Length: 243
Ligand code: URA
Image: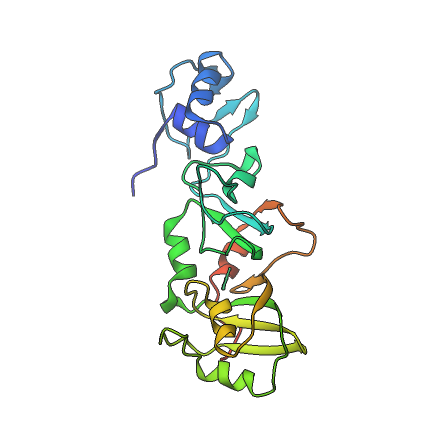
């Protein structure tokens, strides 16, 4: 397999959280070194596995993709950009920003909790394609009382009001009006529509896990961390639940 090669301005922009314009300015103003020499050519071809690139004296490490874990706050749109409204990508700190970042699967504007943001489309497919059956676990506050027959109904597969069948889901009653729901697919507004069929409204919805990846307690709403390789693998896991 051939080595990856990239233009210097593209490398600096993608790896250092800069726009292409800012990266070019940094190169032209002598802030970038390649293999120990100052480099002013924005279009210089770089082999990231071999060439040593520095910006402001700091090594630039090449990562093909970046995987971020966010604790999504309520009131923010799960999208890459929007003309008027704040999106989850707007909340990503500058140093973790990359062109092409998008949220993996959508949470409603009022839903909180675990959301992955990446620029790796293949990874996103592995996590959200229904046939991969990656479990997603939600904590749900309801506006009414759960009954003891409901877990069995959810286990058999709810049929939504428009006739769409859902895959079996695991409903755990945590309190008379509070539950954990684990799904292995992600239809539009699925949790809200599932509870709608048993006459309950969702007051609040929080995603606590995806695959074997749980939202860390210390990650506060609106905060983002970079995922390590172990976290990336655990998000793809299908192992943990039986439905
Ligand atoms: N199901 C919903 O209804 N909303 C979400 O945000 C996620 C799952």
